[in-house]
Amino acid sequence: MDRGFLASLPKAVLHDHLDGGLRIDTMLELADDVGYTGLPATDPGELRRWFHQGESGSLETYLRAFDHTVAVMQTPEALSRIAYECLVDHAAQRVKYAEIRFAPALHTRRGLELEEIIEAVLDGMRRGRRDTGVEYGVIVDALRQDKDADPVARAAIRYLHDGVVAFDLSGPEKGYPPDTHLAECRLVREAGLGLTLHAGEGDGPQSIWRAYGRCHAQRIGHGVRIVEDTVMRNGEIVAFGQLARTIRDHRVPLEVCPTSNLHTGIAASAADHPLGALHRAGFVVTLNTDNRLMSDVTMTDEFAFAVDHHRFTVADLEQVTVAALDAGFGDWTVRRRIRDEVVRPAYRQALTAP
Image 1 (cartoon, rainbow, N blue to C red):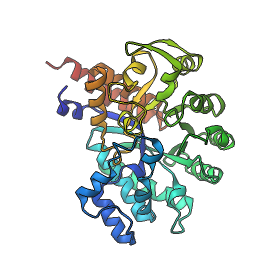
Image 2 (cartoon, rainbow, N blue to C red):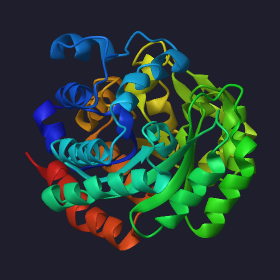
Image 3 (cartoon, rainbow, N blue to C red):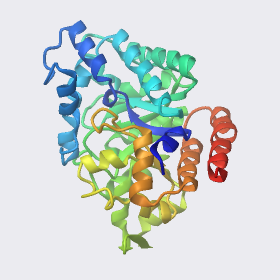
């Protein structure tokens, strides 16, 4: 399919990290504003090349690049600007609904309180929606390796129905199982927030079981290593383990981020990624960017990945887009309107175009 055609299709994204999507020029300006001298380069081209983590090979190595983006995200003005630009950049790719996640505890180095940080991001998101029409939800992350998940969860709950739609646990998976924070997961679920947990990216199916079976996550961030609980033949799934069958049959959405997965070593090549096999086997697959800066990727790129390497058709792209809207945690009437009045008519027209 022509890239211009793919760019024109309406999209939805559920897994996109705010601190993984900064513009290079913005980062340079903010570093100058706050006096941060640790950037690995000051030339925009060199800095962009440095941030591209295509050769990182592991999640742990990939995550080190965030030290620099987080360093310039320590003021309300910076956080609001980056949130605003995030929606503007997604709008340029015809994203109509976006759930953006970030870890407020990373932005307290200059004395900001968790609530100030969340409010600054929400301010930028509101301005972004006003200027672009992109509907959004904010997902608040706690870092699974830290011990402050309880205050982060409680801060997130304070902004329920004011833009915050869910809670997440991010950071390295190995050695930090999600059920270590079972109390916080229960707390946010009981309060009414959505719950999506990183699992099945840096660790295997057991992390997905802990996220879903013990923490009762409603969605799985990444989740692609669920394929290790299946039997594959000639690139297709032909049998299911108990966990894989449960995730498929219970319609648990997987927030698949193909390009990022390649960069963290989950698959050896684009063709080896399990995206197509999972989709054709009936899992609820959604397409996502994860970290647009570190993986130098847009939602249009992820659509092209699915088409070029996994035989996705226009109908398949519609299916994963509708799945994302149906699985979102934001206002259902908003998501339904986008699905029925924007997405479905556009894909219907695309399917019938000569």
